Image (cartoon, rainbow, N blue to C red; front, side, top):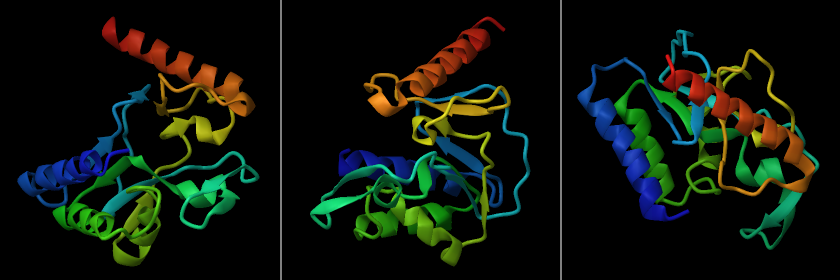
Length: 178
């Protein structure tokens, strides 16, 4: 990931929140999120975060910060930065400030674990932002799917990743024809 691209993602969120009425939430999602149903929940929070709901915690990846292998969920974080709803500009401003100061690790994502200490936080339930990191096949009640369409599937998750992609493609096709 390039630092300046992440900067503009966070700055874009800050600008949108600045222009909107205070207290009205803005859902910022990565472009590879497909919705199968609308987000209908109401949240009383400054920010709503999407836990990764890690399906496995035994996988190791190299950790460049510490020069040894660490558990995947500890390196990449407990929260997913590709699916966040914020209701105030100060949330995006603080996120940007922390990111630019190098706080947190794994780009702009891992530092989201600090947000419960800084803001009123709510969490999306497991029906939201279903991605390959869950190492499972999605249920029929999934609201949104997070696919990395051009990324090669890891051997340990290939069947589930294929199912997630297929469900997202079906939802996209259905949306185009309605």
